[in-house]
Length: 324
Ligand code: CP
Image 1 (tube, helix red, strand yellow):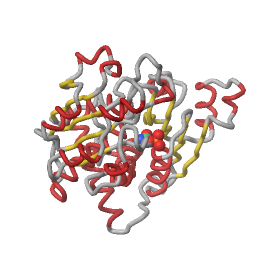
Image 2 (tube, rainbow, N blue to C red):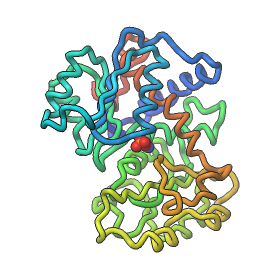
Image 3 (cartoon, rainbow, N blue to C red):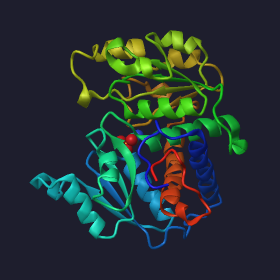
Image 4 (tube, rainbow, N blue to C red):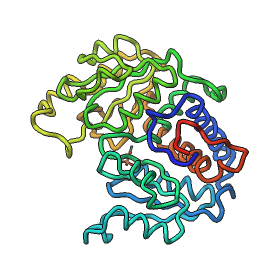
């Protein structure tokens, strides 16, 4: 695997490969083998032009658990404020010996540009680009759903027949886009629920069902309900009802939590707007997998780094849905 840029072009075999390697990585962690020597001598650069808690720290933990050296770059406080370009920033980090670059950027397509421009030779992982994609978030979400459903028998399984409802600010959500593509590839039945103003214009080309009423979607007995963060920083008054109205019509509260079937899980990628898209009852309920998702994210990112940096040696063939 040369790069991991999106899930739209990730095939079933390749997605399962990443999820199965993540199972192996998770097993080493649960056996209290905290550190593997696999990536000793490799350098991973976390290149973050947008804020992050979970993704950046999780990639750092993943790289360190594989014994790679890690360089953390944050645009805040860097020479980006003096006008330095993405090309010059990336080439500077490459000159310091980067083998892999994990990039989060506000511009959709920035990771693709970095991977295909010829500016750097390091592999590129997209850690979230604009409103485009967040592939490792979707992989950790799929891993979490699969683990909850199949437990120790998860390896090799897809998500055929699993009903997933994704709720909220789909318009601005790279998490929603990556999940729609990946979950569909894995065979899941995906329903989107959103106010009409927060549904993207091109949604008719997506492999999903769309409903506007959350209670109707819950009545369909989903196996997982994924609440999206309302991205107030990207919001325009034209898109958004009042917070009170949004919470009443599209928020997951205690009553809706009770209406979910037994065994259904409540997901959120974080960070959460408690009291807006999700109530504290739902976020902290036994059905909530919010922290499980975070923990699984380390295993999934270990798998991605492993396949990127050690996968070309023969024992781990390059997935075809990723760029090679
Ligand atoms: N889910 C997610 O991407 O969280 P962060 O913005 O904290 O990385």
